[in-house]
Length: 419
Image 1: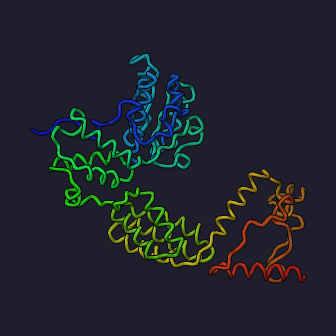
Image 2: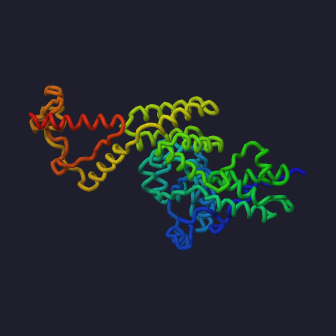
Image 3: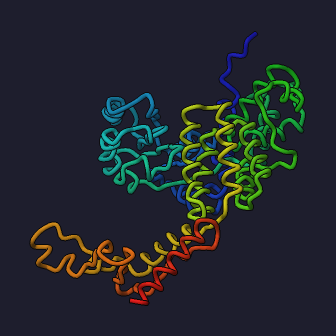
């Protein structure tokens, strides 16, 4: 007879804070957030984290922990009308405070978020929004400012392993009694699912439906690629990939990239990492690196696997064998530190814009020296606020093209001194 119960991932969904695994920083007994819950306080929240890390579960458990009534919406399927229906019914359905859970809240456009904002401001609802995308890029500032941001991490392999063990031991909510499950297989599932607890439970259930759960059965299923046997988590593989490229070891970089691709990683994710690397670790030592990486990312988005591996292989080997420099990366961080240190210093008068007669009369743009009117197209004039006049942020290395940049800067400096 077919099993009419909900899927295993739903049956094993934690019902209390203590059952939640992998988010100890937030939910440990002595954590500030956990103490606030103990006092019955729940403010509007944004839960930001990868798929399967427990955002929906946490929303349900939080509402129950403080005695709120939870109503959920999917931002993919719902909009202003559904929000209005919930708010119109709020006083008549239940006297408990309303906690509104909006899954994938980053999918709502500005108008939809604006419609929610006044109800969050007034306290008519306590919002718990879940998102896999950076809220800074996808949510309006007014809504973000009224919510506490909680960053959820991928569930660690050991925590997923504990959750899988519960599913095997609990015959009421978990696998049927008598299911044959090998411990090595549970270890492998925990390592292979990249911090996604829901995916791990679903994998366990699919394998158990077919017979004994073993490592051999996982391999035979054909849709599971195991991490190496030392138990590296996915983010460790990403780290090894970046560090191999930084160390100019093309073979190592190709191996770790292959691990990610064979493990089912999104090729666009891999390409994004290379775009960041091209600017952070190569920079002006070879400006072509950024062009190659961006082209690979755009190509992967259009083509997809398996052909995308060819683009990624080319980009990976180009970046790994390029000259390295982090001078531009350090330069922008130094400039940002100076801004934080000194605040908004005034723009020198000769650098100011003069679009009107009044601005000109006030001295904007006066005494500005147009470089193209001078020998070598350079001129000695101040380009920094007076308080930072001697500050140097960018110092080129002697690597690749950046060596030429350094020589050019030195030549300009000598030419200006000669005038």
